[in-house]
Image 1 (cartoon, helix red, strand yellow):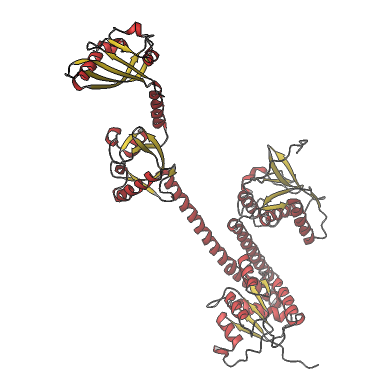
Image 2: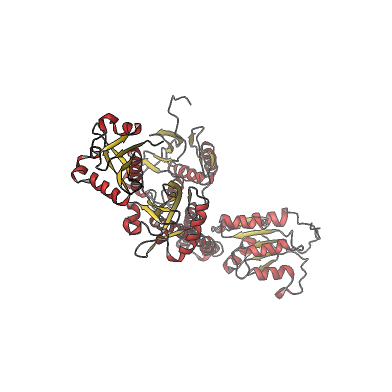
Length: 153
Length: 478
């Protein structure tokens, strides 16, 4: 069986502790996809569109899924979401909002701007590991990615 | 139609001729009265003062004398009369006698008196002005609110009561009103100002109505000093603005708490767990116990934060009103509870057909908290039973959740609904002490009350009211 290189997970997260814990949760669940970390919305968009630090990266090489925190420095999660949905290249990119907040307004805004899923980070690390397992199972294994060059209406 | 008594007097004041109307008004027949002195028509006090003679002298000197005053009928009764006396002279200018016309104005005088009483008794200041804008009549309320006396105002232009900078405009507006008089508020939609004698101004509400006067059209202006109301309106507006600002701050605060306060707890819990997993070999039992305590504390704090956010959300959220099937709602919450502990057997007795109007989501929270409590506090009894029902008390619908669990000491009932107050040790029954505060806030926002009755190990009943249709009396037909 030949393996193509697994597609990346883009983790957009400004809290370094959460980055470490998320990576640990992936590791616990044997999720081996490369994880690209963006510390704020600007870095996330630079990665996706091959700009700035990511100048020259092929934007067509989309990550498998974006795990997006909402409260971020410079450009926040909702603005990232808006930009991703507005661009034909990333229009169908799966985006999972992964955040601390359970505020209704965050949920409503996220879904309205086209989030595919909304997961509240649990404080109990064991629950977080379980959440990461289910996220990995769903978005990395079960979910069918959109076609490479979708015709965007 | 008015009736005029018309008769003549000789130069001495004796009656010389008499008409039928004179007989109707005064009661004397011609044969009784001719030749008698006309002072018989005057009340004794006027006669004593020589009023009849004085009037004749005036009429003789000036050709004409008019008087409004009391006169007497033959039977001694009095009437209010308008009397005109004209001197009669021959072509040589010699005085030959007097013509006299008397009219009974008693009814009109009563009408005027009633009108004055009405004007005086009106709760508003009334200012009556003529077509030239001259003040004709004011009441005592007008004296009071403007600080002028009646005699100072009568004859003055109505603009005396208008702040100087608006007087020019007012003269024009007054002319327009005179062309299209109607009962209407003045300056509809505008904040009108009036000015007192001392120059101070006050906000006024003014309504205008035209009336017909003896000498042409008049305008009645009813003026109300609305300073107190304006002050109250301003205070209300400010209170509303403040409440809205406070709500916005609470919103921002909650948002920050929701995002920022939980993150460090995830680090505390996550890295404690990492230590427990990766460094077990290097931690003795005490070390591992400490880390577990750290994790428990972090999770408890997370729960506190969530409950606090819910409490604040309950205050911030706009209240909706829709029909809510409380029976179905309670059943759904009960089912959820049973799912959390499928091994537990708890009898839920939920009355059918309990419904109300309210905010369905918030009312669900009420049942989540009350049934959650009942579930929690019946964990240790042999045959847990939780009942949801409704009764009528003093014409009010009372909803209740009753359990046969641990109950509590009624001495502490006052603390029950305060945030963070707990009547049981966390080790015995977990909880943050925010649930009942949330319930109380929701019930109060719906305009109801909530209370509790319990005894130690004798179960607890939580009751609440929600405003709505009065419950049907048992046996009453709809």
